[in-house]
Length: 112
Image (cartoon, rainbow, N blue to C red; front, side, top):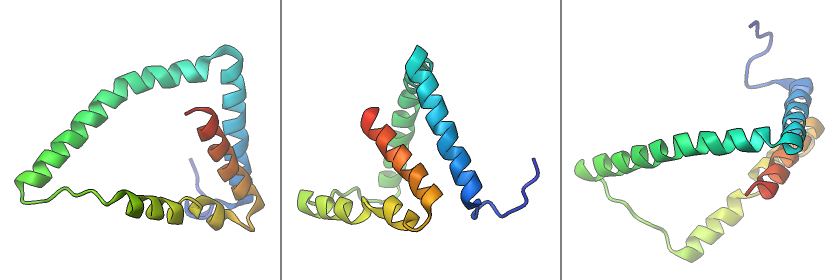
């Protein structure tokens, strides 16, 4: 594969292509369930690994003197409120990128 631009600046045509690809995959998957079925199968394979991996990382962190903390609910809510609009904020003025961001957000809402 030849890359003519740095990966950090894909340009509008790449953003449009990603958005179109996502839409095409989701539309095709809705018709026959393939995307959802593949996602479910992959989840069944990867979720146990991820849970075990993070459990081992927490254990290693604590064994080396690290401390696990949780922020208070109000602080967590405030933090989520501050970062929840990052994708939209960063894509404002970039029509194709914003469309791709909105497509991903809409898909996340539909596929919770």
